[in-house]
Each structure stands twice: as C-alpha cells, then as structure tokens.
Amino acid sequence: MASCSRGLASGWLRRGLLHHRARARQLAPQAPRCYAGSSSPASASEEAPAGVTAASVSKAFEYCESSVRRYDYDHYLCSLYLPRELRPVAIATRAFNVETAQVADVTRHESLAVMRLQWWREAVDDIFKGKAVDHPVARLLAAVYGPKSSRTAKRWLQRIIDAREEDLRVRAQPATLADVEAYAERTMSSLLYLTLHAGGVSDAAADHAASHLGKAQGIVRLLLGTKHHSMYRRVYLPAAVTNAHGVSQEELFQLRDSDALREVFLSVAAAAKAHHEHAVRLGAQLQGDKAALVRRVLLPSVPCRNRLAAIERLNFDVLHQFDKMDAAGRGQLQTQLALLYHRLMGTF
Image: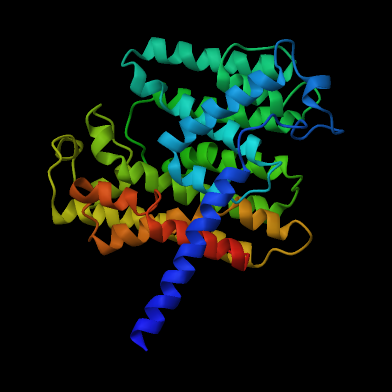
C-alpha cells in the first residue's frame, strides 16, 4: 500500500513538473500585441514609439524576464500562470521594480541614486508620451503602455519611484508599523494593481485584497532583509516595536541575536501574516467574471505564505536562518507544486 501511494505521488509530481516546464516553453518571449489599459486594442507596430520594433521588444522581453528570474524568482514563477496577454505587463513592471529597488545598492552616494530615480521618472513620462527610451525595461514598458494608455498605470509606476526616492532621502528608522505598511503598499501593492488594471479589473474588493497581499509581501521582504540592510546601517523594523522590546539600532547593526530581537521579528511577522490572511479571505469572497483572473494575479500569496511558515518554523531566527526562510518562497519544489495546486483549484 505504501509503495502504491509513493507511486501515485511520484506520478503526480512528474506531471506537475512537466506542466511547469511546458508553461515556460509556451510563454516564450514575444512582442506584446496591444497596449495595457488602452481605450482600444492596437498592434505594437501601429502604436509603438519610433524604434520600438517587434524584434527589439522581443529582446527587451528576454532581458526583463532574465532580470525577474534572477532577482525576483517567485514572481517569475507566478507569472507563468498568468494569461498569456498579461504576462508582458507583469514581466515589464516587475523588471521596472527590480531596476528601481536596486538603485540604492548600486551606489552609496545618495545624490547619484536620486539622479538615477529621476532618470526613471522622466523615462516613464516619455513612455506615456509615446517617446522611445533607450533601455530594455523601458522598451518593454513602451510596448505595453503608450500615449493611449490609462494615466492610472503611469500614476502607479511613479508612485513606486516616489516611495524609493523617499526611502533614499529619509534614512531614519520607520517610527511605526503603519509606516512600514505604507511603504510596502506603495511598492508591492502597486505592482499588483498594475497587473489587475492591465487585465481590465476594476473592483474595489480586488484592490483591497491586493493591498493587503502587497503589505504582507513587503513586510516579509523587509524582515528577511534585516541582515543585508544592517550592512548599510539601515533599519526597517519599526521603532515602536524595537523600543517596546528594548532592542537598539546598534544591536541590529552588530547582528546581535537575542530573545528580545526574536520577539521583534515575531511581532512584525505577525502583522504580515494578518495582512496575508485578510487578503486570502477577501479573495475567497470575490465574485463575477473577473474573479478567477484576480486569483491568478494574486498567486504571489503562495510564496509569501511559505516564507511566513518558514519564519515561524525556524523560531524567528531571521539573522541566521534568513537564507532558508527566503528559499522557502523562491522556487523550492514545494512552492512550485503549491502554485500548480492553487492554479488548478482556482485559489491562492
């Protein structure tokens, strides 16, 4: 009986992996066929800025997909389960997020980092004016957005840049958990809004679910980045929480583990878990012809859930176990199978 069970399990496992690989092959790079959020469908050749050809867009897609796969692997996996017409938008916006998020790490000079973000701000302006911008991420954004696209998408892209720039200029530890949540919502939630909007979703309940999921994702990422941020003498754990447990910034900079610090991690992780659970409850209540699409867009809930489970399982030892905690949502077999399961079940 046991061997029979193992045979069934291994057969299901093989089918799951073959499905995942087939999806990756089916979604090979191609030029997007219409602008996201435009008032009417239009081919890239009819509407794209000068110099944006099908060949250049295909190369831009390859660049962006490679970037997302390298630096944001869980969202690369989730993108495989999006409708084909939405995938270029998701890959373009996620690659844009990678570019803007890495600005602070590329240079330690605040003025240079701010200049780079200003370059992206102007690039977004040009994209929505129909002007060509010489950067592969900008080229793919230009292929999915353009002068006929909704200004809503532009506002969310600019919102991400605003959040990154404010983070560069205001280096103080966030005062409260609400400050951390606000940053997560302006960055991670905005990315989800962009994909929902591109799919024609205009639903307050869907936006509400995306808001909570983005907050959960953002908080988890900042939590797991504690060790990395300490190298730049940055702290993203809210002062209200660290002070309540008697943990100083210097202890964090010195990476000094303690029961008090783990209590801080527990408190912050609990907030992320609450947002995640709220998003899932809201998603289960969605109705209408777009409900299934919304749940596919919110599949990043799966790696977020896995990371939260790993944080708890490893006793909130974020300083020493962050690699294992991050890996729990970054493409382990368990995550890939969980994504397949939720996609088949129409859940997240």
